[in-house]
Length: 610
Image (cartoon, rainbow, N blue to C red; front, side, top):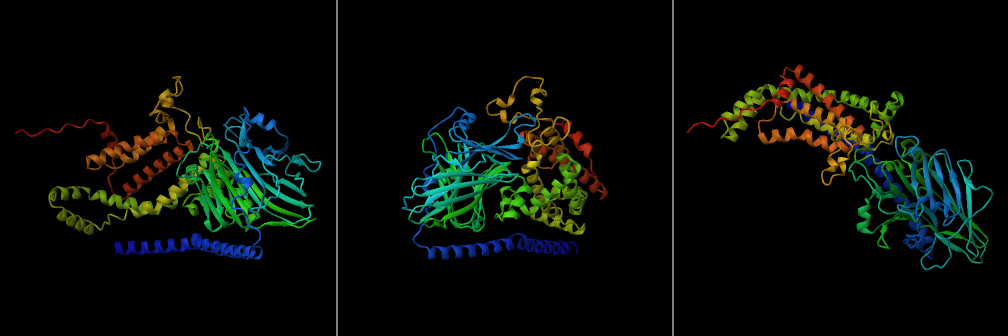
């Protein structure tokens, strides 16, 4: 009966997984594939209608202007002061637009500071070329392959067209450039109250001949930024490009390939950091050739680019004016803001700028619940603890079944040991007698495993949410934890600040010598969880089990405090849950005896006399 019930449950779960996959993943992917096929057909039709104009694989303005300038500056402030600029001032942003190149290369995030001290400097996102870690965004025009039309480049000096010289959420700014050959270029920047710029480019043709140009956009980074390289979250070049779906590359991947080209697509590209991001976004459905590239022309500076060029040319007849509109995102990866942009403008899967991981269908709902709890409680750390309790409660029936199976196994443990001794030289006989014992006692030794396996993706998703959440950054908990996204600031190796030295600077072992109070608490809860059961009879397994809490304690010493607190709390709940469930099912749980046994000296085995 029990085996039949398990089979039925397995079938039901399998069907649920299949339907869930079809509804949440396969169905939307098919819809997107159909939409991309429609766009591709439209692109082919447009190309057939205008075969004389061929889009460049990569505009010369993009490919040749990677280094942008040979000028160097001692610091960021000097670089900003060296060129004329238009000020940016919004509720969330402060910075300026460089009139040389009409480039967005100076941007700071007003609501985010570098440390928990509110008086510390605000976060710098974009930085001009000529200083280390330059980071900027450009939009422009590229002529068709073989054409010689003079277009503005990175060294072109633009002028303000109109009286407004400050870009704000209420007042756009227009820049103007005359190429001296009958073309007048204008670029209008508008910005909302958060992080989205609308860039409207126009070409006024006063010449006697028609011109065709291709819009392009790029985000550029100089030098390789420091990233955590943790498998839970992507940091590096990224984008969503039509049927190519999410494209996420490490900096090392781009260095290895030098350029990664994705033609005949649509969408957006940019760079993603842990909490901040930039992206250049074409209008939804616009046909693009996209590229991620790396170069090091001087041998001293890595240059990364995420760029696209539209494959549909903008043709301007003599005496006419044509316009083109695209967008730039530059700011914090706030889920609600990204979702609003996606819904309002139709940007393809812009919410994936936040790396929800492989299990996004679980991670995203957990994030929404966590945000809701944080809004009620007002403390992100307590919200994490409450969400962990909720998840534990939801999975209580599965945990109850698992621990009940473990309790049944413990009841027959003496008989199993007797069988092992009795048939120690007869493995087939031992297995046969054990199966008879399980059948007689109505025990399925595997029934305690699958409930735990089902819970693993859920708890991993919760772990991912805590790791990537911007809300956890600079969020206080209690006591000495004032930033849940930073490691526990205490360190037992300095006696919590009494010894004036930094052990983390020691070679080789320094990275393991930051061990705060919360990692120690986490290690203790893990050790107690191990001691809830007697040690395995195999000495090797027993040694591994005894060392694991120590290893994890040192590993998590440099992890964000919020993750360590979550882990300690989850261990505590698991110990409590397992203790009471197993006691209820009649299993002997000698937790304190097992703990005391760890400190008792084991008697040496006496060898028999010859």
